[in-house]
Amino acid sequence: MRTSALSRAARALRLSGSLPGEAPLPESTAILGALPIAAVVLDAEDRFLFANPAAELFFQLSAASLRAQSLRDLLPQDNRLFGVLAQVRAHDSPVSDHDLVLESPRLRRFGVAAQAAPFPEIAGGIVLTFQDGSTAQMLDRQLNFRGAARGASAMAAMLAHEVKNPLSGIRGAAQLLEQGANEGDRELCLLIQDEVDRIRNLVERMDMFSDRPVEQAPVNIHEVLDHVRRIALSGFAAHLKVHQEYDPSLPPVWGNRDLLVQILLNLVKNAAEAVDPKDGEILLATAYHHGVRIAVPGSLERVHLPLQVIVRDNGPGIPEAIRATLFEPFVTTKRGGQGLGLALVAKLVADQGSLIECDSRPGRTSFRLSLPAPPPASRQGASKS
Image 1 (tube, rainbow, N blue to C red):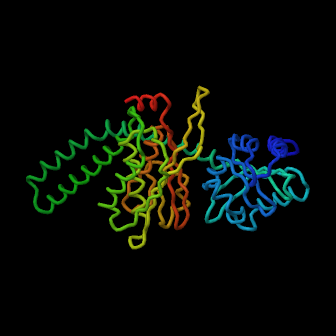
Image 2: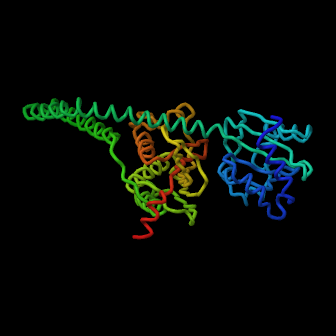
Image 3: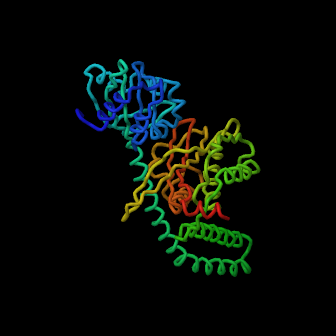
């Protein structure tokens, strides 16, 4: 990469007449801040001097937090990215690399493309951009989740039509047989009725996947989280610590309150069942990021998802073997589980035009919802009412 937008941005930074980290850099901020990909400026010791909003999302840290540390605080010394930086400094020319793995206790990104260019005003300074392949993978997975949900919807319709009516006849026949049966046969009749009821409940749960219109409005997500937290602490999570880290400046999200409660209850319940009963902890957090923009098929419209809700636990993590299919129906690690909870979550999230992704390792599993803000028309209507 000899000539690129990154090189042009570096030249524009030189013309600004200011150094990152010193006086304000309006031109550089405008250039790098407007980039849709993560962009940072590093000094000779790889300390962060500047980070644009996309970089805050990429590193899951604010620009102020990044400026207080070095890239070496976030990545191990032997990471391949430091070889890229060394080449830039050795040859004083742009260098790019692809399919990087940026993994540490504080960062987990796969399939990253990095482009680096020298920043001549600072000895050893570098302008560095990242394009996260995991974002594209996340969008692909979301499309797969929607496809799985549509498959579950078709299955629900088939089950409701083909199974529920015969089940009623089977149960009625078992009740009639019970009346004239001896003690041993009566137990078998009761077993038949219990199993029929279990199958009927499963069919009714599957019916929740059927396509229904979703009414959306501005929702205070912190009120939803507080409601979910109260339910959890009064029941299935009474023995656990449930922490909160809210961004108080977060605006309302655009969604359906009841469905958001259902989504978050499922996620918190899964977290409560995954952690150790003695020292299990769950974190409920919110944050504002510039988020992912998704192209709407058949139009030029792009959906902006800047509002994030995170449910994190300190459990053992999700087995690698099922992570790729985690949100598909009938995938579960629970003994006796039916594998419909996360499939339903994925469908309800997709129904509201949002995204969900999971990042899991031993001791730290996070489910992150990316939600839209209310459209301008609804905000204006809310302000008038």
